[in-house]
Image 1 (cartoon, rainbow over the protein chains, first blue to last red):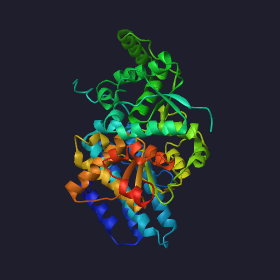
Image 2: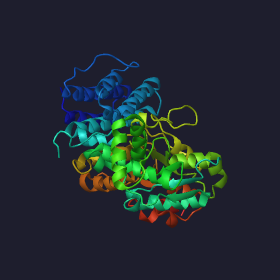
Image 3: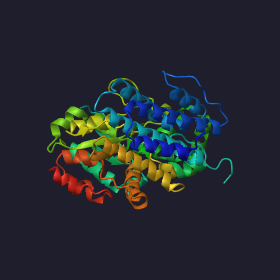
Image 4: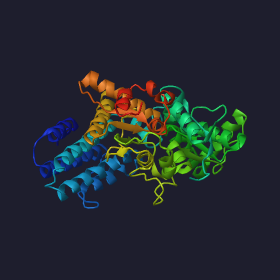
Length: 140
Length: 308
């Protein structure tokens, strides 16, 4: 399993690469899934193989946000990744497709950075989208 | 245009007196230009933002409820407008907690007694954001009819940040179909600035995390997240990122500088508050809107577009 740092490097490589948009889009979707697998495994959850709305990424996100509403901070990012994947698949010969693929790479990069940041410091990240005591466990 | 929200209690919050002063200034100038009355909440206090909330959420509920108690009880308002996403979020959350959590009610009553004021009763006040204020009180047609300097030729990416729509359950008025705000794809700022003539670009990171909470503990992660937002906005063709929160705004500005300094990655996109952009469209001088106070200096761009 690749580390998050390796996933980040891979996303940057795909972003700056020259491969066909559809190929890049598939690679990016796999990187996004691998990122959420990290989150789930770190929380002792077996990543689901199921799909939601046709995408495993959305099923993984749903699984990861169960009992942790702050994880919804990347919900729209996941949905945008899926949207871009669909657009690229539908308009594979469009002159816009390379730009869409690059934008999708930036979304995936954002997901990797967000999940990486939350894995380092989950409680601080919660300010953004829920409210739970930072020092509850340490009685500070 | 409706009479709704033409006179509201105004809760600027701490950031608008400090790093977000330009937002304060432009919000007040905008209200004046549009004939909308903003009456500042008397003797207001901090909403509890992240500091109090991270230590004791019920203390945050109390702090926010005190602001609402003054606006509703002492000043007799039925609406309070908070331009800062953090304040807006915390007041909405306090409203939700006081309607659903008896333990929060108990703490608020106890602390209000100690504070020597009436506790806030849920349902007495409606909390709105500056975007709701303009959208409801003036509306797109009202804006179009008042535009003196169209923003045509400016391409804007709207950045809403995370607190404006999350968590969804504290915003029961959103996601109610046409006319209401969407938590998944917010559009009020798009609607308002489009009515002022701007070209709104499709921006997929409009509600993405800017890493604000990591700014002190892991600055590099925050800088990378912001850099990604800035570069994505540029890729979408934006000249300007419009903001509606002082924390988001200063985060984007500061990490833009840091990204160049620490990672050697320079981005050219400028940040302006939506109130500054709308004020410019209404013909107000940029100086009166505090454009010169922004770290991200958009004056040359505005001049080149004939807007300064």
